[in-house]
Image 1 (cartoon, one colour):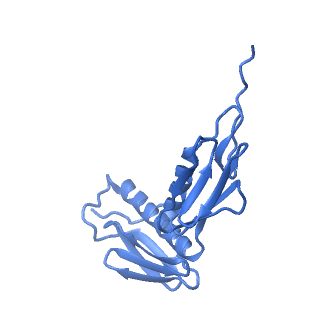
Image 2 (tube, one colour):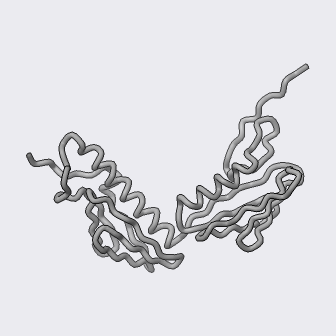
Image 3 (spheres, one colour):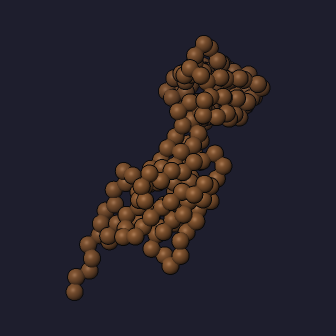
Length: 191
């Protein structure tokens, strides 16, 4: 039984490789090196990657074992996911990712000291957050935090962990929030 090999809409789009980024494909591992760093992506066995000129093309591997018509939708989605992961890694090593947080509240302050982010968020003691490897944190002002890195997942994870230390409360909106986050303020109880 022959199955026509097509990919999802996202999987069909080739990934453009900017100048200064080098790609190397060995077995099922794609190594990517750019001006901001170097990383590798492990490829799924159902995926075949081709590097042509300044593009990376991802498609279903026709020689993969177990590709059946019943499970074809799953394989198409795997191709789209692998393509998105490759795009994110290429973007990370060439331009990087960043996430901004703002502190809202009287006396709320943040200060970056090397690999430690010191936060004063209204608790009886200051909170220190250990910055993981691969992430840099800047504090241009006392109420702004900028998180930068090459891995999109890690930048988002660090931002969510810092936000979780003091999430915005719904009555006055005080706390740590993302830069463009809108907090719906609740009305207080009336006597």
